[in-house]
Image (cartoon, rainbow, N blue to C red; front, side, top):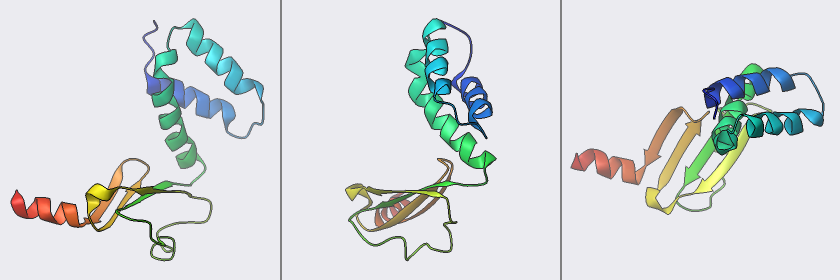
Length: 121
């Protein structure tokens, strides 16, 4: 097992793929992970690489969580730029409202469950 951290692998992967179109890159990268006995880190590496890649090309990943299926794109058109990746998730625990997560870091929580938790705490 190597001492390389997932973020180091993710940064290397992004540097390899930006501006290049080679089907060999993922295959070679997985062989490296296998050689270093780091395949168990692959989920974290891919998650970090996605965020780093989007930042490098000036885009964001926006996750819109709602308690039920609603039309969210019209609500948040001004927050989402063309080319951003938008993922919609149903999370009944929110009760009502919406939660917006940008790049896995920034978070806006306008859910009823958040408001109730704030009152109780």
